[in-house]
Image (cartoon, rainbow, N blue to C red; front, side):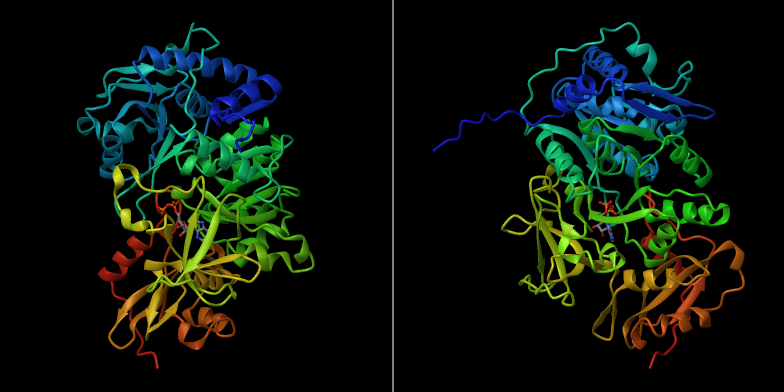
Length: 541
Ligand code: ADP
């Protein structure tokens, strides 16, 4: 028997309609150099319509890719809705990519138009000769459009000016592409993931509900995670869907600017990778600023005990989620089951969490692929599937990342406890293989970062003649302890926390851990540094 329900298309156009119709006076605020830009959803909707008219005039048709090279700001949000709403595909570009990667993804996606923030223009100028397929460049600036090699160069504001403030949005098949994003290349050449309207809508539902991240119309939402990093984890779409106030920090990510923005705009929810919260926490410690009541969502890399404790000390309700570009990206969140309300929340939130409603997760033996028990100890690779988990990469590359029965092989090694909480132990390629056993670099890093004098720590495996590999820790001391922290202090601190054979063979003190384009520890670079200056490997007994 068929239902009486229609296949009413799940498209992002609905979110735009809902926010502008039901919440026309709610605000969208963007930090600028010396002021803030603010307008309402009603004004936002009018500009989105003007932008859709402009796209049409530029010759952007259904399925055409439109690149954006921009920070988190209101113009970027306008593109988030005008491009997919008009039936084209939003391709968010990461300005921190190496020029050869940036050029590669623009050409691979065949971007027809690129919208670029004036402050990022130089990144594009550098590769001007190698992206000949792009027909138009549009600069997003308040002033006149700057001159450069990129032709034709248009101004965003000129493009919108005088156009009609409503648009006859076309009917779209929910399965059509709405946006695309490339993996940041931490593990090789960037690979394209293409999101549909349907997957983006369902992901928004999945993260907004109580058992997901839990977002409300009454929230004031500040995504620190860049809008080029997996759609800012879906927050701009979910926030618009709800009609929540949205706050954007643009490129002003220093702790002083962020705390100011959070306090002034009464931000209730923010999200980002640990490397943005570490300096913020330092700032809070130093100034005693009170951010009581703020909910903070950490993802992209593991939330360490030290960071959790620190943020909690300042009254910040800290939670963690796990996901990948391939999973839209949020696939699991460390929500606390009602039956576990008496458990120490920290024990739960330091895990990567329960799969969201809509996502199925299984644990498979890394070598044999056989199911691994959910006992909180046995480890295997996380495999996932669901309506917002990609079933392949753009152009069909790397098909072996998907199992024959349609699950994504995430490359993340984890255990899952009997309640269903996954705890990531490592990425397959980051595990340290010592004497036939695995050492979790993530766990070691988290333990080291719990030391009161440590700011950041990354652990890699270095080749060892007897044990195959041994862990070496790269540690950044807090500024006030620079030069006053020793290897022995770190090892002493670790001894009661980890097995003896897990103790790093060497602790190297450096000024800063190299980061990837999305702010994660860049172990590729650290390994290269280690190769050039081999660590002194102790003959571990
Ligand atoms: P890239 O793969 O280029 O780093 P992604 O942002 O897609 O770009 O990274 C996804 C990966 O980030 C996951 O496979 C996982 O290894 C890591 N990750 C994401 N969230 C967490 C988390 N909460 N804890 C530990 N690792 C995480």
